[in-house]
Length: 280
Image (tube, rainbow, N blue to C red; front, side, top):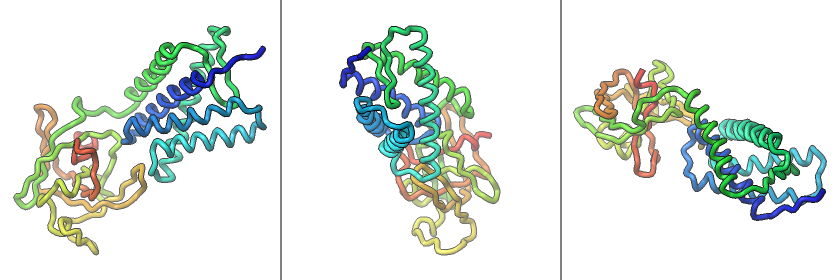
């Protein structure tokens, strides 16, 4: 029995599915990319769904194509990315895809006349766009609930105010509490806040202000980090005073380091990334 496939419905189905899959991956790994980049990655996957019109290839060629298309989606959404993080993103994308595929197969088993077609690893489901949006949103909601249950607890407010003091100079900065930030000073294993260098002003050692760190200096530690864009070292110091305000609560943080980052952390929304470990 032949089945008519409408290109617009095919692209729309895969666009919505890929969009929510990439949103789920972004949420689980706490990657800071905008929804525009997520949409771009979903578009790559949606265009790749046109392979459904080609003859059924050998399983090995089909596997290579699916791997290449998934890698292209990840790069379109999360580039630049380190090799290790790329493998994590790709692996999690496949895990989420398997979960979604199981959900859709269960749906098809309950309604054999749904007309769902899986060809060359591409999903085609002739249903109304509103129903498709509801099903994709429901799947994303289930994954979001699972992520919230499994991820570490964080303070009620994700945003806070951080005051850094060095040699009498204080700077009040706007911070974001990020569960994906696990930076620690390697010797003391104490948590380290990541702060924009430009925002600190004079509230940091003079050598950091001038960027003249050429060798080991007293009070300065190089703190290794790993991010989506790669790995590296950030210079850090112990401030004279470190204070964080969340809502109406003010805390004095002792023994926490400040890692100085020369790049922007957010689009003007915050200047400090705060690891939840500072509240322990």
